[in-house]
Each structure stands twice: as C-alpha cells, then as structure tokens.
Image (tube, rainbow, N blue to C red):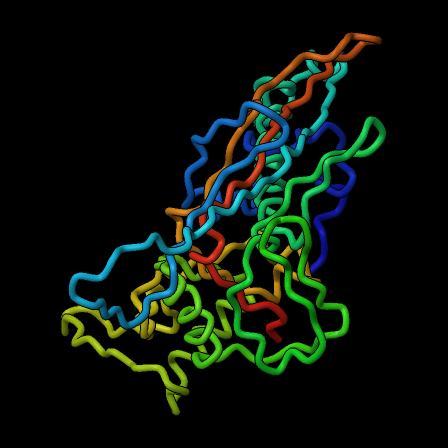
Length: 330
C-alpha cells in the first residue's frame, strides 16, 4: 500500500510537540555495602588518628609447683596503630540561566547536582576505604591519603599466587602483587583465610565480593560436584511454580556463618578490588570523620552558583587480625 496522495504526515509535519518523560532515570548503582555494614559514627579529632590494640600471650600448658614463689611474667605489649584523614570532595556549578529554564524531571538543577555529587562522593569513599593503599601524611602540595583495609590485613591464603609481598599490617604499606599470578576461588582457600582470622580471635560475619567473584562463589557452592560445598534443597509449595535458585546468600564456613555480600563498587577497580574477597568482622572496623559530609557554597565569580560536597575521614581498623582477604582471584 502507498501513502494517501497529499495526506499530511509526520515525516514532513512541522510543530509536533516533543514527547519527553517528566522523569530522569538514574541506573548507576549507588550501594556502598562496606560503609553500610560497619560503623560510620566514629569521630576524629586530628588528621592523624591513632588507636591501640592488645594481644594476649599464646596459650600453653600451665603447671605450678605447690608453694612456689610467684614472679611476674613478661607483659604482652600493646601495639599502637594509626591512619591519616583523607579529604574527598565533588565540585559542581550551575549557571543562572540553567537554573531558570524549565527542565523535564528536574525541579531545581542545583539541588539535583547536589544530590548526584553526594552519591558520587559516597561511592568514591567506598573504593578509597577498600583500596590497596598505605597511608600518606601528604604535604602542602600533595594530598593526604588514608590507608585502605588491605594495608592492615595480613590474614590471607596466598596459595598459587607466586611472587608477592604482604602488607606489614600497620597501614603503612600495601600488598605488592605486581609479580603474582591469579588463582581460582575455592572453598579451600576461603576456609584457610577464615581459619587464620578465627584462630587470631576474629569472627568475620561478612564475605564481601565483587560481582564477578560472587558469580564464581555461587557456581562453586552450587556446582554438581559440590567442590566441597553442601547443597540444601527445600520443598516448595506445590501451588506455586518451582523456583531455580542459583545464588548463595549465606556461607556456613568451618568457623561460623557469613553473609555473602556483593559490592558492585569493587567492579570499578579491575587491578585489585575486582579480584579480591574480603572476610570482615564488622566489630573491629569503622569510619571516623573529622568533618562529616557537608555542602559548602563557593565564591561566586560569574553567572553561576558553585558548591562542593566534602568530607574528611579515615578508616580505623581496631583489630587487624579479626579480618582476612583473598587477593588475586581469577
């Protein structure tokens, strides 16, 4: 069939109103599971934050002679750890004209940018707190850096990694994995890392994984050959269709149950975070703020309103041996 002769049609019609939805769809992931599962109520009073840890003497058989004169044993010294406060911020500006025009789905452009930059800043902080980075005091011309969690954690299973050097566990150094090789995630290395934290007194409650490693973990636990995992089946209500469950949300390790948490922000760092599994005891890690999230107006130098959202904070790892990591996962 052909178009009716001389009929008005949309291909040549002038003045058709645009059909623009009065909504802005935001799809980028906002979740920050690490910050959401640890305390963020800590407060810092200096750019250098310090804390002490106390270990116990190793247990041993203890036999004493009747009537023996008691002498004091050697005291187990405390360790003094520290971290530096980092400053993170996002800057944005909106022109006077941009504030005045009518925009679909946005009531106030400055408010919208303030919201977006706040979310972006929190995502940046998630990556910063988990980064394989030692602290840096900075200077008048270089930024201070807070050490990420891996700089305090030495509990790990490094089977199959080859050449590497671990962090010192004090926050001053990172893991050096430049010459190491990747290895497959397995229940064997997960349990080995979990064991080191458990024997040291920790009780990790979170197994935090990147999306890639979460897929690997689910396949590992649900594989037909089990690979050391145990399948649990449920009888579903016959009224409802059967569901195929292909994910694992809780892992019952040899040393306690852990919530299996996906951290989508780990996917942003292909060199380290995407290849690392974290075993975390939330009791012994927190974020301490010197300056909590705040919005500040910047000097007006033209026909625009400028602001930044800023935070100054550090990571405090109260008991480094309570946690474990598995780096270099394929």
